[in-house]
Length: 449
Image (cartoon, rainbow, N blue to C red; front, top):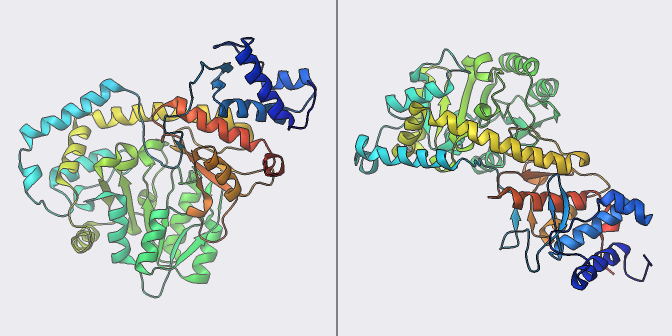
């Protein structure tokens, strides 16, 4: 192939388009593998990768997982009709339509068992005994000694964190958090004027030695952390670190806010901090991540019944009761076994999407747990997170940069929401765009002339 004035990757994309128009390539034809074409032309792999990406951008070809790149029918597009692949959000997804129908049927069944009281009456703050006992049943595997009088039902994890931070923060002492922290908690802390102290992390999550150092230096009153499938890094804190964190909390009189939104999803058998330091831990188990965001229900396990009573008082002053209808739906699903079946279906879909992400981006340093709804991509080849995300936005791909989570300097990295697209095909489109960009250097990707 002769090299003209245009960049070589554009010349290859132009040649693909010309062959399609001339009929030399037809709908469904498979293009050569990228490495094979690079070897045949005597050029580098990156150039061919950019050429195929350009051909996909023009809707000439489409990638199929495990199969290769194929010519598309004229006028078809692999991206959604909106042209946007949103990989910013982080929530559950499942593909079992029969199970979905059963979930809705149980919701409809509440009309005969709950009646209008679920719609027209206020219920006690903290939840009814029946709903709290359902929460105990949901958590009993990880907290076998749990009693219903220690459990409080709140309007989601955010409502729980608001009430707890209002109740427990100290006017003269900060809150220790992971260096990459859940954005909702950052917002709450800013709203309530609570100073945050970042604790260093590595691939296994929060580092106990740095927690001890920050405790000695800053004397925080609270520690807020996510031990399972950390958002955004997907790290899970191993047992020895959990035990060390519990010991440090006792030594420095730390109260722990354990944001365990992903604990049931992870299913790793590791004891929560509430089992290792029950006398000082508030364990927050949201159903938004494990089952359905629309429920807006979280079960909060308190150190004792008195702590539950104090939290109930804080809820009255902040968010009031959780939705009786949402709590009743959760109780019904738990009692019938549908909650566990739903969790299993969500895990299956999540693992399939993670496998797709690892296949496309694993060689680019993607970090992720097969049961996490999100993945973490540290950037290489000199990319800045801002430039990389901007290029993706230009291509119609939305991701979240590390700035949303960082307490202090942000690393060059992105969070990718794997469950956000409705269909796996749209997820694949977004991931391939990311992979195409990740294999390039910023200077080679710059098309400004």
